[in-house]
Structure formats: C-alpha cells, structure tokens
Image (cartoon, rainbow, N blue to C red; front, side, top):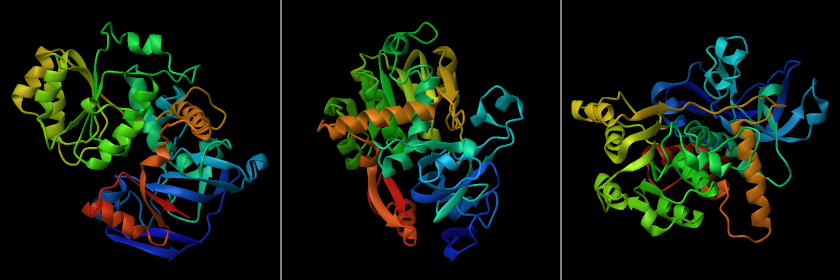
Length: 377
C-alpha cells in the first residue's frame, strides 16, 4: 500500500509499504481522510517520532475493511481514537484512559493515518452515523480535544446527556459564577473551543487572534465583531480590561503554548479566575516573578488538559460521544437549510496522500493563511 513514511527527521517519503497485519482484536481500516495536526510539523521536521520509520497522522476516519472479532463492523465508517491504553495501570483502571501510563499512540508511536490503510484496536473505533460527512468524522479528534478542555472547566457535561446542561454549566465551579470567557489562539483547537462555547449558549465570550481567516470563521459561527480582539490592532490585556469593566475574564483558554501568552493569560483573568492551558509548548516555558505573584495574590487556578476521554467502542458519556452527537445535530440542521457552521468548514486546504508534503510546507512556512489542512485518500 502507499503511505507517507517518516524515515528520519526531515525525511518523509511517499512509499510502498506492507499492508498491516491485524490481530483478533484489531480492525483494518481504509483511511478516508486524515487531518494534519500542528504537532505533526515538529514531529516531521524537528523532533522526530518516538519510533522511526513510522507513518504519522492521528486525526483520521475511514471504512472498516476487515475485522475478525466484529464482522458487523465491516463496511462501516469509523472515527479512530488514536491513543491505545494499556488498560492495566492505575489511571486505566480508573477509566482515565487518556492518562494511561504505558500508552501506544497511532501516528507517533505506531503507524497512523497518512496511509491507504491503518490498523487499530476494535476498542478504539467509533462508528459514524450516516448524517456525518467523512471530513467531519476526520475532525473528531481535534473536536474532542476542545470538548475535553471545556468539560474540565465545568462548562459542558458529557455524562448522561449530550446536550449541554446549561444550568449546571453556567452556574459555578468552586462557587465562582462565570461571567466572561476568553479564548486566545485561534488555530483549529481554539476555533473549535469557540464553536462549542457558542453551541453551549455562552454569550460573554471574547476571542483573541491575529488573522483575517480567524475573524471570518468566528463571524460565521455567530460571534459579533465586538467579541473579537485582533492583536494586530489592539493590546489584548487593555482590551479585555475595558470590555469586562476592569475586572478581567473569569475563564481563559490559552491555546498557543508560548511563555508570553501564558503571562498574558495571568494578566487577563479576574481574581479567583481560571486558566486552562491547552496549547502544546513551543519551547521551554518561564514566568517573570511579577506574573507569578499575580497567580498567588489573585488566587488563580491553572489547569492543563491532555487529549480527550474515550471509553471504548461500546462506551458512553465520553468526549467523543458528545462531539459526535453534536455533529449529528448540526448536520441535520444544515440539511434543513439552517445557517450553521460545521467543523469541516474550517478545512482550508485539501491534498492527496501523494501531495501532502505541499500541506506540510504551508503549515511549516506559514506561506498562506490556513486553519485545517486535510489529507484525503
């Protein structure tokens, strides 16, 4: 089969490789689409993968071609949770599978989705209903990263209900009522955070970015121009202070991963505010003493997020079910002619598997404005 193989740092080649051999508890999936994640850029060009040679790609969806243990899945479309937990460590036994201490990972530790076919444990598959398009199915992984961040901040619930329980969510966390929310960094994850906040009914949300394409997508989601802060035109800290009556925001999503943005987050939140760190660090992080003092004196809460919750092919109440159920609702509304944004509307570039290096170059060199670059088999 054809695949993009990372042989060593900077050496990604379109190659002929052997078809995956599957075990009893695995499925062979023909890949329909696989998104390029921002983390793939350093993986390919700077740091390498944990194991090489390796086929990268972890944001994928496809059609089950073979599955000995579950023949009913053959021919079905599926999304794939890329983290493969050991199911034996303390975190796995507590069903915190994304926190597995001995995990495998499709696209960074084992072969992933930049190929015609990928193998995955049956446990990691999520069947996709007819209403959902292939491109939206391939957006599930970044969608669920956004959902996980919101859920950890008690802004949505994924247990029992797929609809946001607004009374519980908008009420309080730790006794502090949420009045305002900021999202800084409007790449794929940041925009999806903004999309889920809009869907859940939050009104006082401010989105901080620096590209025209980000503004366009936010307006398409239903945000007002006054909710968008363009750092090319205004000082973020001053603007948020002005727009929140000098208080700062109660919740701040930092979706970039640089020290200066971490500092900005601390400066933008109100006393007792909460900061969710979402962006992967671009380099070592450091904080000036005066910023550290703000954390102490304003009694701020800092929280990190990692990956997303998934409870297996027959599970319920996890981030993936929440995202999939919202996709079904949105897709039905779109089919009825409603003006509603779908995650695949964030796709700005599409490339064949053979030509995906062109997409990598755009993301690496930032030669064009982009949000999501999709590889289609």
